[in-house]
Length: 252
Image 1 (spheres, one colour):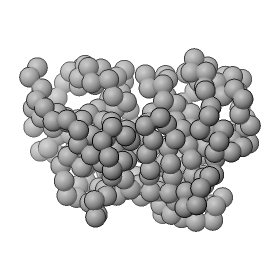
Image 2 (cartoon, rainbow, N blue to C red):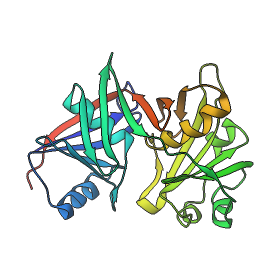
Image 3 (tube, one colour):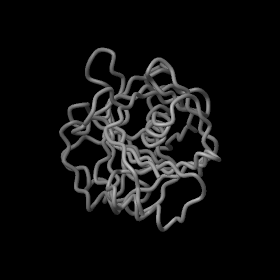
């Protein structure tokens, strides 16, 4: 069967977030999919049944409920418009002028107190607000520079309940609304290069604070990437580009 590596949320190779994409012609064994994802070693590998459009995502250590960049990568490989059946409901992807726009559920965050592990995991930053969404813990810090420069204690962050931790601040250059970085050590992903699903929380957090529905967000990981995020009620439209860097065949 065909397998791809796609760099998502970028317009150039070796940037953005790499995802594996495996095209299936029917149901696959869950343990086998987990083994393939562990072999690929990307933050997520997507498995799509091309007969039913059932889509699943696996990190190297476990299955996840939602993944933006691997959905973008899958839509890029297949081309055209698609509606995928997933653990998070039906996700639609629309191809527009070299971009893929995805319709995801919003994941708004509710303010909570910072736990000792969270504070220990983010040394040297000014924590302005902490909020918990269904998937992640969002931490608003004092500046984009703090987001870019932070060196997290990943062992401490792995003890924070939830999928992972989003660190964010307003953008620091014209046209850029939001800067973030995302850490998922408990899921085998120390830092995710570009996390589409995290922007379901980021859009819900920043849109009312910045007074605008359409945001341009930078995920300031070493690879980096840009996400267009538009809050529309209880949905978030995520836009990104992608580049295929590898195409091969699984023989096991």
